[in-house]
Image (cartoon, rainbow, N blue to C red; front, side):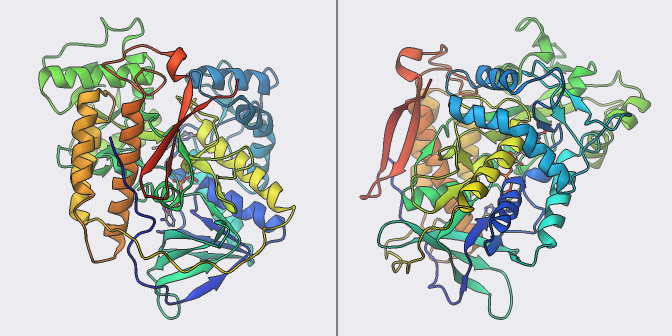
Length: 545
Ligand SMILES: Cc1cc2nc3c(=O)[nH]c(=O)nc-3n(C[C@H](O)[C@H](O)[C@H](O)COP(=O)(O)OP(=O)(O)OC[C@H]3O[C@@H](n4cnc5c(N)ncnc54)[C@H](O)[C@@H]3O)c2cc1C
């Protein structure tokens, strides 16, 4: 598969300029905490975010945040559990940073005002999730962890008048100096007065904290802002991207019809934990013969079984039967899910719930070292858009919020040592591209249908051909939908190429045509980068042991 990436998006010349010491892009847990740390290091911070400040995956996080905080737990055990989940592709140095620096990072989050749940003795209340051998998941408001973390960090940032926040600011491309180092970026602000339309934000440090890629797929648990912008921006600028083929799919989101796109309501596995079962159209519990734990098998196994059964029966979804729950169980344990169902005219007390797997989390991203540095000078990445190496081939539950916190802290520590020199950015290159927003739906369908839970060389060829066609549907009208569509298509193309190349099944990457782990050939990281001729250069890199 050949890929071609233009060096920038088509956009008007910047009409206004703003300067700072550090620019942070994105206002989820990763961006907000990076902004806090950069301020503590004494820098003037510009925080830009493409919608309202609390929009992003962070506020949707339910389960919690993992860290070895219990007396009977240790960072060494958290490290061991994370390495097992990562299926041979974790970077041990990065996992060590995550596990050993995690407890202090969570305590700092509390000191910034996040009210995590505590027990009667006032100690953090810790629960357990799949893959963890200890109780180490801190949470807030029961299943409203993300809402509370977002609230506390937004408030902390708002209290600091040296952090300037611009909302509705869609970042487009990186600006670099004659040494190829970051010196700012271009952005489009839906504002008024002086900062309206496309402008330039200048700083010798740019931190991308743009979150996930959910909207690259037709159905996702991620909010609409998750269009992979940071990843696409980094790729266009020549930064390295790794592990992008490792995408987690949540087995059960509410099926809202074949035409439904974007963020879909999550139907938590806690329902299956309470006894709900999965049925096909004929009423058969199809997971029972497939795994000893049936509906409580690991997420990947359940998602795969659902997809196979949907294919066999040629149906767009399967069913979740939770009719055995009484009203009290719904009201006490699952009020949000009950509300989601009722909003869509489903009464789960009497009706079966139509469910389908959907994209949930991407383990890879812009490749960084343990201090958040990408392969471009002055350009950092943190949170879900980064690939620090902590997740390897599969993320351990509740490690993603922690990753954002811990590596933001690391970036802050580095910035406390001083900033790189400020230089004038080079004029923008003339070569640019823009894709017609009409192509987005097709790309999303191709990705879900062919590069989703189940992948084969054949299915990925179908996706690659379709995405190449989409990338030729040019637009000459620069606006948000076209910029986002171009990012979605670029990420889809690079992801598909990497997934096709990896001829094995490992972690969250399932190949129907290569069902086994192949350590001899594939215990490597696939790294993609835009070459000078705009082709995508792909290399295999050994994973440190
Ligand atoms: C339903 C759901 C449940 C989850 N549950 C958990 C859980 O229990 N525990 C856990 O650890 N993880 C969980 N996750 C994953 C976790 O929430 C995310 O990985 C994490 O919040 C990502 O944080 P972030 O700061 O990197 O990105 P986000 O919180 O997604 O923030 C990204 C930010 O970047 C901005 N942005 C994007 N593009 C641009 C652009 N071009 N210009 C300007 N701004 C831009 C967005 O507007 C947003 O502000 C869950 C995710 C979902 C969707």
